[in-house]
Length: 175
Ligand SMILES: [Zn+2]
Ligand SMILES: [Zn+2]
Image (cartoon, rainbow, N blue to C red; front, side, top):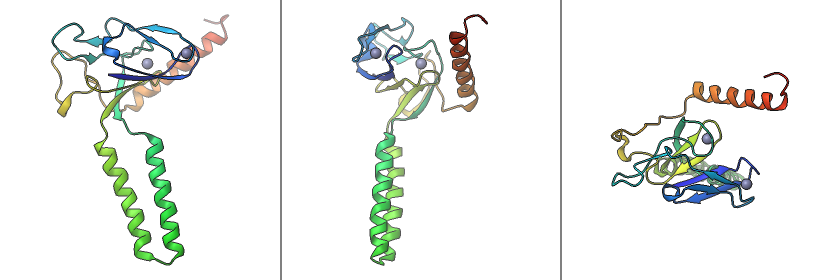
């Protein structure tokens, strides 16, 4: 299992592999150590495959399933497709222009479906990928916590929670 998170101390993005066997997360940029909560991964030290139960970076128990699709790659394909179609359009190649546009859209959609699922934290945006993050075939694992897709209501709840925490931190006279 792999985590990608923004360090709470220095805000640098850190990626760490093999988190199911680690005791803590160490920031590569500032060296801050985040102890991994004991209940974060189910099936530790047993024959069961490890399964993520909650966020390791913040106290949030709520994560959502999303595609592990690098947005930059998706954008690069679209931009390359648009540029190529413009060249074809300039050369009055009508069929090629629309062929390229259709092809890039199809490539984007195909890649999206081929990409594995990953889990993302509503509150801090930490991203978890690799085995143990989602159940293969979508069948609920015995006793494990199941995470669903993105839910706007949950997202809004966490956004307000973060905003309130920030307000309290900046104004300690009004708890
Ligand atoms: Zn750091
Ligand atoms: Zn989190």
